[in-house]
Amino acid sequence: MGNHDMGPPWLIPMLSASYFIPCAVHGESNKSECNMFCLDCMGSAFCSSCLIYHRDHRVVQIRRSSYHNVVRVNEIQKYIDISCVQTYIINSAKIVFLNERPQPRPGKGVTNTCEICCRSLLDSFRFCSLGCKLGGMKRGDPDLTFALKLKQNRDPFFGGSESDDSSTPKKIRRTYAFNRLMDGLSIYSSNNDGAESSGDDAATNISPATLPNFNHRNARRRKGIPHRAPF
Image (cartoon, rainbow, N blue to C red):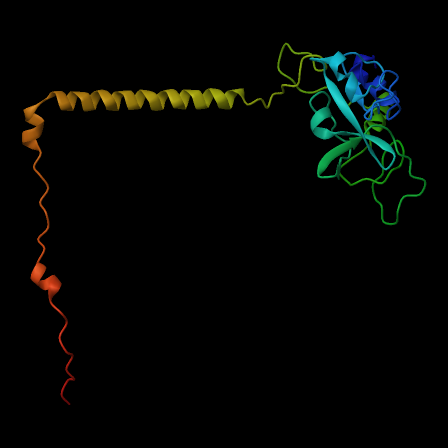
């Protein structure tokens, strides 16, 4: 496999970068932890104060869970395919681990483990982290890929995050339906204008509505005293 088949060029630098160390530039700041990574620069991790140097770049934030580095699914899945990697929910957010987490002894009753580090998994997954999936690809598994299924004439790693499930067709259908609705309203309005322009003919064909009869004497009559029926 070539380097392009192993995923985007920023994947390995992101997995191997050192996070949560003091920033060399903003070491005295309260938020000097290096927990950001730029997918365009592919350099070292940096702190939030360094974001000013990465405007209009693709930046992801790395977080920590049980002393392991994680990234939120909604951030990373825009750029790579994370299928076959187990995800977890931490603090109401779905995350995925960056690197392998070896487990010496799987728990009792475990039927599925990571193919690389033997971490116990749910039955529907093969790997516990992005790094383990990369290890499975290095073994030559042709079914594994990090490439997203994108539109034509778009590079799977550099061409943005729009996939085949784009909402553009829905918007087109909505616009078409809206235009038909507006056309119907305009036709209805023109028909009404023509009816009003007919003048007295329309007025002579319409008779006023007949009011219902209402008896005021019956409305004011009080109910009589009830009488018992004879035996």
